[in-house]
Image (cartoon, rainbow, N blue to C red; front, side, top):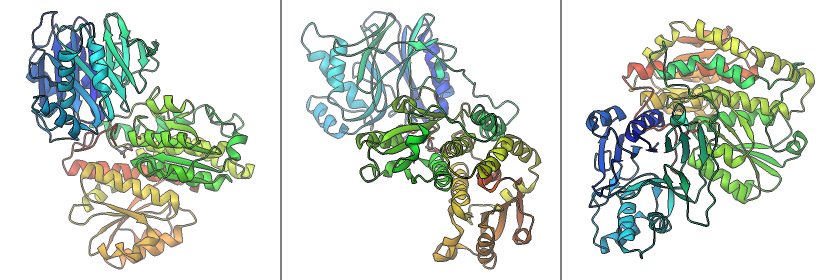
Length: 608
Ligand code: AGP
């Protein structure tokens, strides 16, 4: 989603363009840049364009080189179409103030009435432009002795909604920044001070980071951060972690590379979290002790999209391996009031740790007294800082918009959590842990052994007959849902996913000659029921793509078999995830989709 990068240094715009490039993975549809070169009172130089950062670089054509202060933006459209005019930065009529914004200004309609009465006209359809005119008005009318920061804070106090804002003005030796409900972090390096939507662009440019809080309004100058007197300034701390460049290596796309990363990412998720005797899991980092968790009234998991499907699988583990009640919720639908109390725990599950819906659900949970925690991939993200405890997913950076390796790492960390608090028989636990340890190797051989069957299955799928994904039991039916989401995201083909038993209650009406049905059928207690569901489809003309490790009679029903490796039934989501990810990838490629950057989607969804 929108990305902001700002910098004060000897060659600020070069750093901003590089920063924007490193924020590209968040997803965007247009980009823009602004720069100040000297102390004189000239209008601020700006450029903006639909398309990619590379288009912006071409359009800028070196014009911004040597700028001392610069801000840039990648826009993911919410208010107004994808046009140059709606791209950020937005500038005052005289061009002496300009700003970029991430988030949504909910009272923009009221504010635009206000500014039109003051004689300002909007030149875009965005909810952002009002802010720059309000700032212009404030600066022109505020009393002597007031600063740019005072004017900025007055404008910010009129806004409702969520935002990260960076603004510049001629005559101001810095960048005004504000955060509420959208991420913004400050970095400091040799000869530069920078601001960014996330820490990724800081690697290589900054050695220290300072995390802004909601409600922070600052002026950033080459000498540091300043605020109005009553506001605490965040301390700089060492920038931890390493930057993994968005480089697919020998793979044609990041998504395919990330699918193939899974043996390593799973191994990282498990590393140090299984006891040396192989009998227990040790997920440390949680605020509550195992005894406290076991006595909870309930555990809520809140998440969106892929993270939500992983959460449903995690809940199923918690329910089966422990006595604690657990339920997963789509974060934007979280009924906090009815499921949160002091004896509950609400866990946010997220790759980015910046998903606004999930953060809002955690805020609500906290408000109603629940303990909060997170399973999150990005170190230092808003979610991990908000909860202050939890478990990192350790999947490494995931750049492709369609989540793959993080899905399996979420399920792995969730399973470790369930095992940590589990009170099932030691012998049962040992069997799962024994197989869990082998999982990276099992996945590795599965990736190597996948044959032409994936291409054959991809060939069978076309947009005229929407694929239906089915499974039975939480592990397989939510893997089926993840399969359908993956395929929709990167092939643009409408897909349906449901528990096999539900077909006959309506959706079976969709099946006709040649309808592709992707059946997730591991060797578990649901296998014979799955066989019934598959027969119901087959007898109505469906073509069956069977995802299974089973070599029994069920395989006779298949038109194509996507063979998986055999493992403990509790681990079936891991082996089943691989073929459905590869299938979605291949269908996406056949449909000519930019699978790493599918249309309309953002990697980090920071609006509600
Ligand atoms: C996954 O393929 C999606 N792009 C999307 O559903 C994603 O999982 C969701 O937006 C949640 O993101 P998060 O994990 O960063 O919170």
